[in-house]
Amino acid sequence: MDALPLSLADVSVEIAGATLVRALRLDVRRGEVVGLLGPNGSGKSTALRCVYRALKPTSGAVLLDGEDLAGRGLRETATRIAALTQDNRAELDFTVEEVVALGRAPHQGGNLRLSARERELCREALRRMDVTHLAKRSVLTLSGGERQRVLVARALVQEPAVLVLDEPTNHLDVRHQVELLRFLRDCGLTVLVALHDLNLAAAVCHRIALLKEGALVACGKPAEVLAPDMVRVVFGVEVTPVVHPETGVPQLLYDVPVDGTATAEGNTS
Image 1 (cartoon, helix red, strand yellow):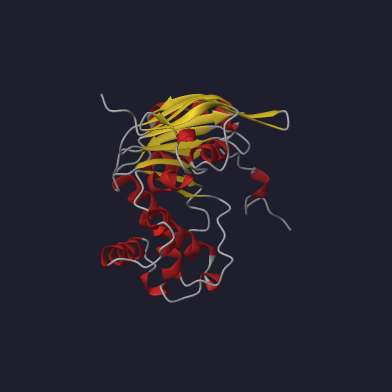
Image 2: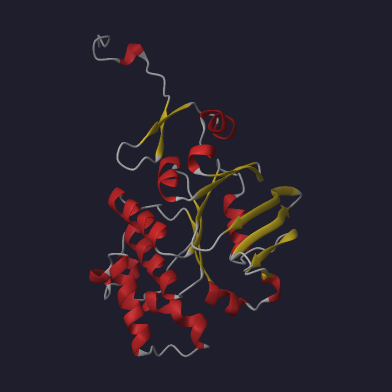
């Protein structure tokens, strides 16, 4: 049997005496989109940092195709895993097409002259992320959403087997949020993504892993995991689940109390 493309095997992270991730066990199957969900401080970003090797687990291991990532070189890892992090910055005055071309760096050993195939790969990534019209622009002139899409294009140019994304919909308008998540669902890559929006996660993820205080609380299909009792325990909010009439995907309505005194009828000021 083939090894799973990505596994977190009892990964724990302790920093300054605090346990940020607790014995996390999570497998991601080939071509699957798995969402990491949880409140702020639940360990989502910390777990992802271990996967793209910005952080070393205190104990446990991250396995790529059944092998411990710690035994691989960083350049080799970068040819297999591409990451979009929350703190991605583009401080240098590069054009968009130059930034996207940097995705080929792990494959080139320092030689940044692109082959014809690689130039076409860059053009396709720009097209997929709807940023072709920005190719000659400096990244320093872009909006947050435009820059986010450029960085996703750079990750695609790496031709990774595994794509790791930490809040990739940050700064994106609704249209581009939907398009990006639809792309993730259909791209065929193995994807591990941290998201805040429960309804977007339900729409795109094959499975959802819920974290609370660094520990895995539940993992399964969205309809199983995003049940009202579980959402109450993990997020502290009340929800009413409904089924999308077109897709059949579960969606959550948040039970926000309405203050009757704030209605127009009752407003006498």
